[in-house]
Amino acid sequence: METGPPPAGPDRPLIDPAPAAPRGALGAARAALTRIALRRAAELREQAPATADRLLSIGSALAPVFGDIHVRLVELRRDRGDRAGALAAGRAAVERFPGSPDAWMLLAGACLTTFRQDEALAAYERAITIEERPDALTAAGELYARAGRHADAAARFARAHAAGAGPDALLANARALAAAGDRAAAEAALALWKSSTQMAEGSQPE
Image (tube, rainbow, N blue to C red):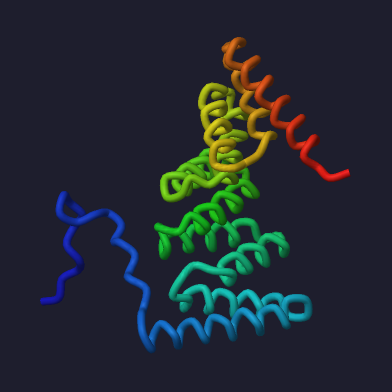
């Protein structure tokens, strides 16, 4: 008698891990089909957006790695007003490529368009655990600030600056510190921001 899969437990996770990307000839064939779908979808985007959506969906499922085709699918659905579909595509991307920070960034953006700030923040944080990237840190800081978690916001803005976000992250850090009640640290961050902007202006050629 046939039986279904064993129940979830300590030896079996609730969500099965993503399958490994195909390699060798199979991976190359899938990559080629993905490029064809992406190119053809771009040609049909304006005149036949539904067909373009289907092509991008097929290509996204075939793609051996996360890439432009997943981004274009989310963008197309968002532009067509299908926010739920864009969110579904973003979630599918992270299910297939949980180790890709770009996939988590894509999901975060799709969450924001559907007003799911908590899920967006979780996606940004997941991206940060994979790669200390300034865009994810800055975006997370902004969401923490909106939620009134100013100390967390200040920490993310400081890390964003350290990761290369530029002087604007210092200014955001100063504002978050002030909102958190740490006036001394806020003034220090503001002084650093002023120093950074003055140095940048002084380094510009005349």
